[in-house]
Each structure stands twice: as structure tokens, then as C-alpha cells.
Image (tube, rainbow over all chains, first blue to last red; front, top):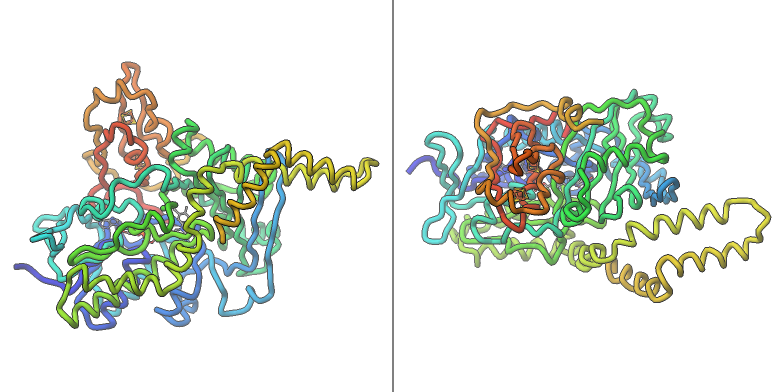
Amino acid sequence: MKDKFDCIVVGAGPAGISAALTLVRAGLKTVVIERGEYPGTKNVMGGILYTRPLEELIPEFWKEAPLERHIIEQRVMLVSKDASTSFSYKSKQLDEPPYNSYSIMRATFDRWFASKAESAGAIIINETLVESLIVENDKVIGVRTGRADGELYADLVIDAEGVNSILARDLGLHPEIPEHNVALAVKEILALPREVIEARFNLKAEQGTAIELVGDISAGMMGIGFIYTNKESLSLGIGCLISDLRKSGMQPYDLLDRFKEHPMIQPLIEGAQTKEYSAHLIPEGGYRAIPPLCADGFLVAGDAAGLVNSVHREGSNLAITSGRLAAQTVIEAKKKNDFTCRALSLYKKLLDQSFVMKDLKKYRNFPAIMEKNKHFFTTYPSLLSDSAYEMIKVDGVPKKTKQWKIIKNFIKGRSLWGLVKDGFNLLRAIG
Amino acid sequence: MRIEDRLFADRFRADTKSHLKIIDPKICHKCSGKQCTYACPAKVYTQEEDGSVRVAYEGCLECGTCRIICQEYKNINWAYPRGGFGILFKFG
Ligand SMILES: Cc1cc2nc3c(=O)[nH]c(=O)nc-3n(C[C@H](O)[C@H](O)[C@H](O)COP(=O)(O)OP(=O)(O)OC[C@H]3O[C@@H](n4cnc5c(N)ncnc54)[C@H](O)[C@@H]3O)c2cc1C
Ligand code: SF4
Ligand code: SF4
């Protein structure tokens, strides 16, 4: 038999690199296989990187990692056709190191992160696609790559291939992802001078803003838009459920244009030049859609396992933590020389004890409720804007009369029973 | 902004062979939704006058939407391009 590794990791995204780094630090012979020219060239994210999970792996990573801006303001904009109502949280605390989160670009970030695993001893093979798993007696024993003589063997394979999860699907861990459990996001990098960004978003050097948008911009679909500030560009994108996209008949790039032309958005991006256009899927099924996480000789981490918290738009942190916990499981399995799914069930236990499963479980009802109640994305943002306008407008009508008018509008928009049901559902979704 | 102009901002290393394949072109003729032709963010699929669907794989952004959205007929044999080929994001 050819070269045998302790562990093969498929994919050099946050989950795969975090796993590899943990494995080589424990002295395990590890190879990471990545299809991109280098790690990051295939990857897309909003993206906000949360500090904590990475800090556990690389203390004070911010001193060397390629980061854009630390986030001092988190804004939610509820958008109607021609207005918006915003909620913003901005604090001095978020502006004090160690910062809570940073905007990043995956092409540069992943490359740096992978270099850390490489210098710790991991072998990273780029430009190589894993085409299938090698299975013998129902146990995964290696991978087949697209290269000549491209078979590699190992005691264990960690699957960190990301959202499309083809290898896990082919192994039978899950069927094809249903269209209501996944969103398509399209994104642009919009270049603007540093000073312009800082003036428009009310920031000082290095400070950043993260804006999430819900409402008219998703054209009635379950979807969320985002605008994040980088050093000299904005990351702007919008994601919608694929099932909604199919029904809408809309083209994703038209949706993006519509978003960019919205009267409340256009001034923010005025004069910006599109430097890159990208598209990527996001798992949205949450807790109830998580497939089995192991088979004999095989573990799944990150997006490949659907580990995304769609309420808080977190994914990279769940990927980093799940990759680390998968690696810890491999390290234990190696000690006992037991690679059966039963021995690997430790992985699930570790995940259950971590924030990953605790958070996903907390929001387990969210995806289904939001998918069935589109008015959270349509009626409410409009009602809120109309109400705000009503109260702000000075036209001689007493405020009390206005208040009644607003209440009547809400009832007209949703019916009294609808309002009660929505309140109940919202509590159930986020409770 | 036209989709062609958007894709022009991107870098690709195109392979000589398509990584996406329509399994049975005849099925596309009877597919009433033809959702691949509008849902693909890179407009890879276009409907020809005779009702068949053309695949311009070179501009594929490798997202996976077409595979998932062709759910009724599962008529797309979907794979990533060979290692090193396809889209090359500078920012991501
Ligand atoms: C538009 C958008 C915005 C987002 N915003 C945020 C955010 O603000 N904050 C946040 O925390 N998360 C965000 N996420 C989610 C986050 O990007 C993912 O959860 C995270 O990237 C998952 O990491 P991963 O390592 O599991 O998968 P990925 O990052 O997808 O990495 C998978 C890797 O495997 C490689 N690969 C795949 N198949 C093969 C194969 N067969 N052979 C070899 N290599 C292979 C890929 O090239 C890739 O490098 C966002 C996602 C999107 C799409
Ligand atoms: S959705 Fe599928 S079956 Fe329909 S036209 Fe597209 S590829 Fe053909
Ligand atoms: S993978 Fe995405 S970009 Fe490529 S053809 Fe399919 S839908 Fe279009």
C-alpha cells in the first residue's frame, strides 16, 4: 500500500484547517486536500469572523492574520419599498481589544490560516479534487483524487468539504440537500476609498460596521442582505432560500441590482466599483437538518454537516470549533486504535457540550417557522416603516389618533389572530 | 449591471472539458419550470430556440444551486471542476 496517513482532511476551509492544526499538534501525520489553487480561492463569506473560537487555537492571532476591520457597530435594517427602520448597537466595549469580531476576506484569510497548519507540520495538497471516498468493508479507508495515482489512505477521513457535502451524500449519510434547507447568496466586493467608507459609516480608522437587512430587498422571499465594511471596500450581498428562488422566477443578479438600487442603500455605495462577483450556498436547515456526523473511519465537520446558525449569521466559528472537536475525537480514536462509528460518537458528545449544538438546538424551530411565515420578511418591515413615518410626520393629527391608526394598520396587514400567532411563533423560533 | 460585466470582474481558469453535464437533454424539453435558466447566478444555462438547454460551464461560480434546484428530474450531473480549474476568487 502507498503512503498511509493517520488522517486525511478534505477541504482547507476553516473546519478543515482547524482540524489539521489540532491533529498535527498532537503529532498525527495529517494531509489536507484542497481543490483550489491555494486555500481560499474557492471560498466566499460575508464575512464576519468571531474572535473566540480562533483564539483558542491561535492565541493573539489578530497580530498576524490578514483582517479588515474590527466591528464596533452591529446594525439591523428593516427595509420597506422606500424606507427603512434601523436598530443599531454600537459600543466602546466593542472597540476595545481583544475585539469581538472582524470583517475578513476568505481568499487571504484561509491562505494565512492554512499556512499556520502547514508550518505546524500538516501537508497541504492544493489544486486537487477529492472525487470519491475509498470504502472497504463499509469502512472509509482513504480518498480518490483527480490526479494520476491519486489514491491516499488513512485511518480516518475528516470531511470538511463545505455545504455541497457531496462525499457525505455519496456515502449515504444524507440525501441530496432539499431546496428549502439551503440559501443561495450572491455577493459583490465594492471598492471605495478608505476615507469615504469611514465618513459614510461614521467610523475611525480600523473600525468597522456590520449591517444586516431584512424586508423589501428579498422581494418576498425568505432572505437576508448584508453590508460589511472592509478597509477599502464593502462586502455587499443577499441570500435567499433556493425553494423561494425557484418559485419567484427571479434571477439572483437582478435581486442584487434591486438591493443596490434601493433608495436607502444606494447612497452608501455611490461611486463604488465592483471588484468581484461571487456566489455560494449557505446551509439553512439548522438543528433538525443535521445529518449523522460519522461513519466507520469518517467524520463530518463544518458546513458539510450543516453547522450554521442562521439566526446569528454564524458559520465560520462553528466550522472552526467542529473541526477542532473532530480532530480531538480522531486523537482519542488513535490512542485506542478504534475507528468505528461507535468510538467516533465521542465527536457528537463533544459537539453537544459546546456552543455549537447548544445554539443550534436553541433555534431548532427557527428555519421551519420563518420559511412558512414570509410576512416576517415582507409585511412587518413595511408596517414598521409606515408606523415610524406616521409618528414622525407633523401634520396636525394628534399622536393618539395616529397610534390608533397604526394599530389598525397592523391588524389590517396581518389580522388580530395573525399578530397573536406571529408573536407566539417568534417566541418559539428564538426561544 | 449586466451579468456578463459582473463575471468580467472575476478570474477564471477554464478547463477544456465541462464539469457540468445535462444527463438527458430530452428531459429538459418537457421540464416546464426550466429553473436552471434563471436561478443560476452566472447564467450558465440558457434555453435555445428548439427548447434544449445550453451549458456555458466556463463562467460557473461553483455554488451548487443548479444541482439542487433541478429537483424534479435530477437531470444535472454536477461536479466541481478539476483541481486548480474554475473560478479563482481574489477576495471571496
Ligand atoms: C455569503 C455568505 C456569508 C456568510 N457570512 C458569514 C459570516 O459573516 N460569519 C460567519 O461566521 N459565517 C458566515 N458564513 C458561513 C461560513 O462561510 C461557513 O459556515 C464556513 O465557511 C464553513 O467552513 P467550512 O470549512 O465548513 O467550509 P468551506 O469554507 O466551504 O470550506 C470547504 C473547503 O473544501 C474545499 N473542497 C470542497 N470539496 C472538495 C473536494 N472534493 N476536494 C478537495 N477540496 C474540496 C473547498 O474548496 C473549500 O476550501 C457565510 C457564508 C456565505 C456563503
Ligand atoms: S431544471 Fe433540470 S430538467 Fe429543467 S431544464 Fe434545467 S436541467 Fe433541464
Ligand atoms: S454551480 Fe452555481 S454557478 Fe455553476 S452552473 Fe450551477 S448554479 Fe450556476
